[in-house]
Length: 294
Image (tube, rainbow, N blue to C red; front, side, top):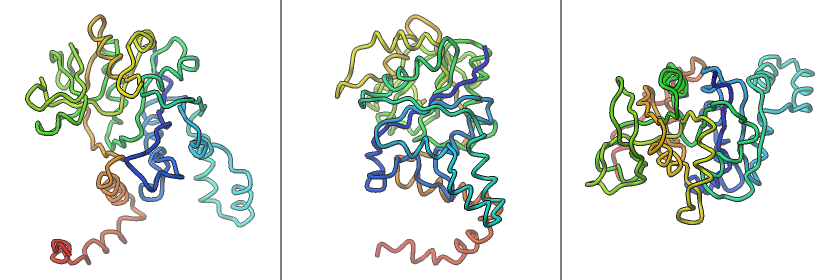
């Protein structure tokens, strides 16, 4: 069955991006001149996703509003003859069918995925953690969908990380079945550096079948009373088929402030309208001054 639906977990509090995220959802922080969530939705649409399901929380209304009609703004742009800007706004709401569902309490990623159960129904679906902006061709989620269509089951995105950093991530273990693809035996959350079976870290892209919901219901709550999606995937891997896909592309961590700034710079440099002025500025920098601690 075709993967048509994408679940976007945008209910997080954004504690790693404070103080900016105090009043602005972290996924609405701009990269160049577009919010991070738009890049992630564009990735989904380019991969064939037709329906965008936003899992939101109180205070996240701006995310849903961004993909809705802004009548007054559109009327003003039309009256002023700003056709280019008007076309950009209309393209947003026509990008995909968007629906919002509310996670009423911050009970973890597993609970957030479960919140979308009634909308997902009985078909496979993609899950996006928009903290991770991934620039790649083909789109990262398309690479996971291709693995799902070949092998079935659940698929998680992974990337290699330095060995000394494995204790910051969920790490996968399994047997390679094709280049960059493993059938998983287990997922280990933040293992000690000396105990990690691999250096393949899970990042925020998944393809699930409806089977995942039963495992979310079965797993116990973890620290802080949260239900972690990695625990559900690990439980499923013991009994079913779970694969990892080592995607190609550049991943930016929006929760890391340097990662956020790097993403904004790199993505702006890919824009023909922004690149010339930005390159001119970068070439004007006094690198010796940048190396100075003062």
